[in-house]
Amino acid sequence: MTQKQNEIVVKLQERIPVQNKYGLELLEKSGWNIDKAESIFKNEQIDFLAKKENVENELAKKHLENNKFNFSKAIQSIRNEKYPLTERIFKFNKDKEDILSKVALAIEESENLKRDFWIIDSELNKLNPSQYTFMIIWEWQCYEGWEDFTNAICLNKTDHVIEQIKVTLKMDTLSDLIRKAKTRKKVFEENYPEAINTTNYSDFINSLNSDKEYSSYSAGFCEKRPELIDKLVEFVQNHINEFPK
Image 1 (tube, rainbow, N blue to C red):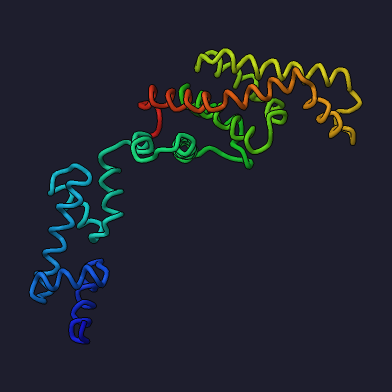
Image 2: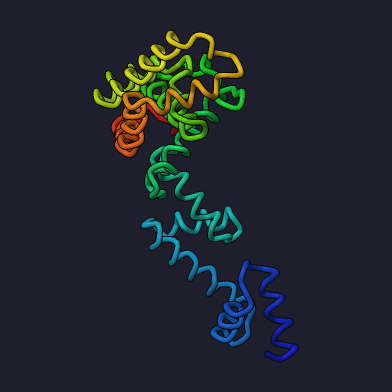
């Protein structure tokens, strides 16, 4: 490419967001006429976006013009117009836990939920019943993943989580596992009262985790966790109109 041609490519780039190679191709197609090259670029972008997003060319043109022909921004703009927020999350993401994480964030932001690292329990009362079910279970299992099963069952919300898993998600086996684990831990606490809130607490936890009955509940939760994720995905999909739009 000559110095003169390079200068023309730069001038074209001042008008449209195009890389050197594509800009050179456009100019060669247009006989090095900048106006024609710009027109070819815009028409190609409109056609491509319309086909990619399955929309009319006029709609594609509107969103490209509104975003100064930034293709990525135009795609997002069209999707924002076509699909409600939660539906968008499901449509354009594949990983189930990533989907649920984004749904949780959408709820948190739309309802302005307050945090103290974790969302404050009382904040969940702001939510509609479907969002409440989802968020209390999602937050609890996130805490379990961040900390561990033993710490998770100590949370004040655990009884509510057990109820939602049993009654709303219809996962009797999983809810019973969590309830039995909590009961088993309480038995240990009653048998070793001196271990609670003392320097012996780590020994107490080690003894609890070594207990065959308790460890079977902990292992059972780990085994059932993928099913819980599937159930939460299904639950949100079945109540999608009650989630952020």
